[in-house]
Amino acid sequence: MSQIHEDVQEYYGETLKTNEDLLTSACCPTDAMPAYLRPLVANVHEEVVSKFYGCGSPIPPKLDGMTVLDLGSGSGQDCYVLSQLVGENGKVIGVDMTDQQLDVARKYIDYHTEKFGFSKPNISFVKHFIEDLSSIEDASVDLVVSNCVINLAPEKDKVFAEIYRILKPGGELYFADVFADRRLSAELKADPVIVGECLGGALYTEDYRRQMAALGFNMSYTVSNSVLTVEDEALKPKLEHINFTSQTVRAFKIEAEDREEDYGHKARYDGSIAEFADGFTLDQNNIFAAGEWVKVSGNVANILSQSRYKAAFTVEGSFEAHHGGFEAAASEAACCAPAPKATTGCC
Image (cartoon, rainbow, N blue to C red; front, side, top):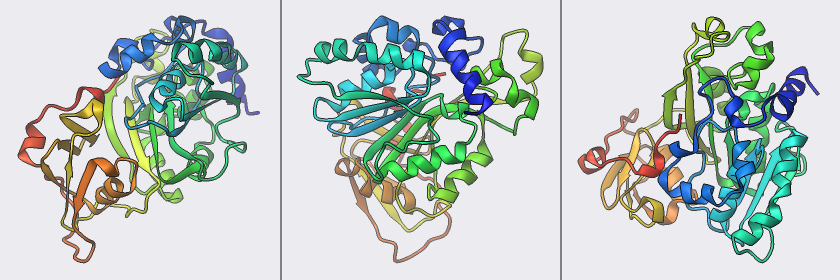
């Protein structure tokens, strides 16, 4: 186990007692969640919620019956929200390396099974470093989520490799985390408080892009982002030269080119995803008002026709003729339509 692993375990297992002890804005309050998720969080035991240290709301829709894995599940808040969304026939696996957090999560499995009206648990918690998911079979997971945890991993390339391995073809990675506009110094990366506050291991955007592309995740899509501030007087002088953002991003295990290319595709959303009846946001550049045709890149066309969202979209076009690089050109209705509330960023 690396020193970083030890420091993180100590910080989240012993130093932090509740999310009130955090020193930066990297952790989001529950009231910043999408409106449709808040009643589900209200069903989660208060001790689980009090020890939640996420930085976003990385829970996409259309999960009924899915198998979902939460990397760095902590006390289990997101897992228990996901448990309600996948339903009794779905499956949720929480992975964490900190015993104190796992103890809290496991303590309430029976409580939540009864509260959700399930005849048997649909959730389990496994102790793992997120760089090694050896107990999870290849191509066995529909969705991998993570909430402000990948930054804590010292070997992020191994994390992404494991995610790619366990995802089914067409599967999705959807996570919220802290990004930086530069690589941090060795000194900052070794500071246990800065690391524990999810800043020391922030993903440099270009390193993230390169690591993902090397695996086959050729395109990553930013759903939301917001600036993180460091108000703690002891930390501010050390970090004020770095621009941190909290981002929610998604990627798919689907064949894609490393740039968005134009083949003349267009797509129309039918409004059938319950929480997104008026419109669906794939990312900041691909917003679909229900019933309106929107021009899309070849990569997005593949996502909308091969992922679990395919039943909600009609995609027209082929790859016979290439028209050059793609420039987003959403329909006027889609551009003018308000973004669905459920896609609001958190931090």
